[in-house]
Image 1 (spheres, rainbow, N blue to C red):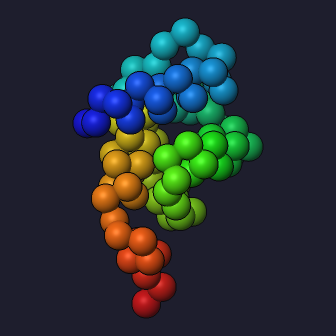
Image 2: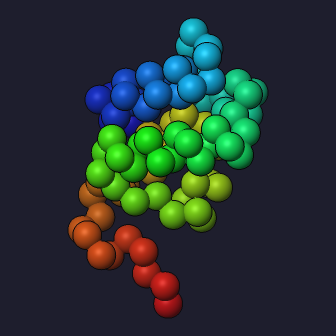
Length: 86
């Protein structure tokens, strides 16, 4: 898990969910994450990291670790190759 991305993502989620800390392996719904907050956080992460997170990818992000892994993967995919619509 990329610790630099973890630090930024952790801060974004703690601020949005108004919690002092988040276990990277615990379900984010346990901290009060709902669909509205999820959309807000995804938009903020896309802007912060200059990446694209699809709806399918967003649904798969259940824990902070999942989020960090997805952002990391999105950053390593060359532009135009992450959204194949076959």
